[in-house]
Image (tube, rainbow, N blue to C red):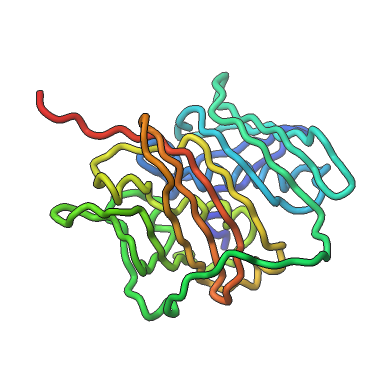
Length: 271
């Protein structure tokens, strides 16, 4: 049986540079599909390219317009191939309209010196926290199980928070090993940080999402069911904010770091 994530990111190659994709009803968000599954589909287009070198190490997706339900196409072109790295330019269209642009970097896994300066938060095992449901009727949320450690959305009448920090354990609702597309999708599983500070009535949407993948495919596949996600924010203003996140394995390996620039608009008051 095909996992719902794999159904959603499946692409059909129409020529060397172009693939056809289709939105999946199980990954619907407030407007269009969940951004993480869109980014994962972009990754799938790169990973299925006949001239691919290595594994994805970085991807940036710029969401130019909402993707309507149905088919869309992705052109992924390797614009520069070096000995151990490859650089990609990506454009997606729905009909005649550009719906996103993206870049990606792939690289050959090399055995070099390594160290991790970031420190995994000290938290309990996943089963020591209750499973939590984000209280929004969004289909994509059904594909994950979350156990919040700190930083849930302050739903009224709860007071607003003084910071945007959040931590939770995440797993697939339907069991599946982690790989690059799944990790890229999970990098967008944080609710918008502005909800912590201004409440869930604020409108917010991702403008650009960047994910850096630090672990090779073998390490991802052995990461276990649960990932620890931690997120915060830097500055809010001019209707924009940046949010940053880390994704850790249960064993304490930093698997990915991620950054977003997010648009927000507070609800109007008065007449």
